[in-house]
Image 1 (cartoon, rainbow, N blue to C red):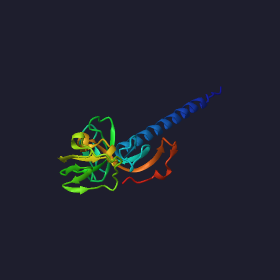
Image 2: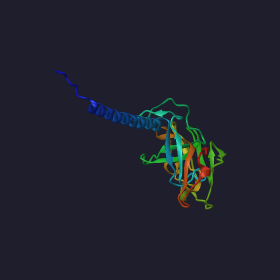
Image 3: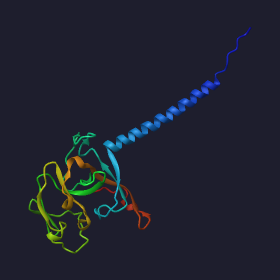
Image 4: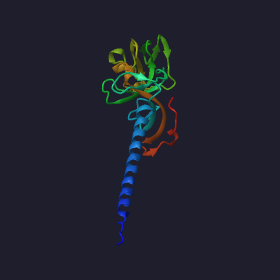
Length: 216
């Protein structure tokens, strides 16, 4: 009597399907893991919702921030590792808003630790010397007194250790260190370095000339 062997085509098909599903699952998992790693340690995208950094950055600009330049922050701590350098005067930084750390703000560094900052009739003074950024603009001719608010007359204040004094390039329309104080090192997310996309919502068009523009 001849013994017959059952074909195993069905089993092979099942194994093949299982392997394909597993391959796709692993590919998706590693893609997500790599994306999260890049976002956490290397670069992170942001968008500009307000005009406080005009004309350097416009509403609708989308940019990338370098997250490792100032050091990689250890999760759940205020410590950083592998720091290349500290923020310098003139850097455009992204940070957690001190009054609501669920929000990210972007401003330009004006004062570094130890600097004395004062503003007199819109003119910024750093350590007693007039300081004018080539990127700053003033769009409101009205001059506010110290009694009316800190926008045009402020200080002097001394920047404490581990903190930075920041201002928007659109000086008359920026809510910044003049109003709410200093940015702590632990709240700095990264340094903005390039615009990768720009959308003009009012004109409903892409600003092609801004794409790929280095942020200085």
